[in-house]
Length: 238
Image (cartoon, rainbow, N blue to C red):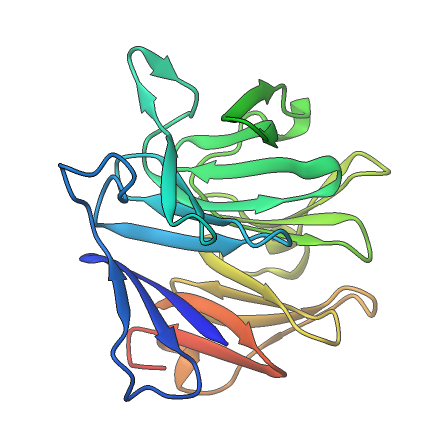
């Protein structure tokens, strides 16, 4: 019943059913090693175990365990080059607890273990995904075993794990290639937001629809699903 909101002044948690309730805000505290390491937050993803993954503008990826209210970090520096770039746009988990992280200069894939300590082991990407850049969002379709990829340079793509095949849907349907954000609704449709409008893709029927509304000329910032509704945050509002 909580909404986790990424802002440029920290991570905000609000009651989804009572906006009059004072929100909780997580910010960087230099004296607290378990605080968020940077206030400019780009993305928030909560996996099935309840762990929250927080992508920041230039300090890598934070991992937050709500049960203990402390954080750990995965970031890029000269001494710790675990990420392609410290600007993290997104993160998601797929089968076998694999963690996929999207950055300004490509993806990183990790097998993760949260036991006595927080540890990552970076593994090789499929070669078809190695050269992708500006990974703005990643969404895993568990039913179809597909990883949907929003790239700010290459557009909307689908990686099928079983076939080990990468399809570019921006090229297939003539969509804008500057993709920003993704969501899957209860009907398994893909909502793809770009710099120049919103598209809805029905993969089963192989159709694509551009929303003929105010959103067609609006810069999409975020698309998210809450209950049975899809919300679009864009340059003209929500």
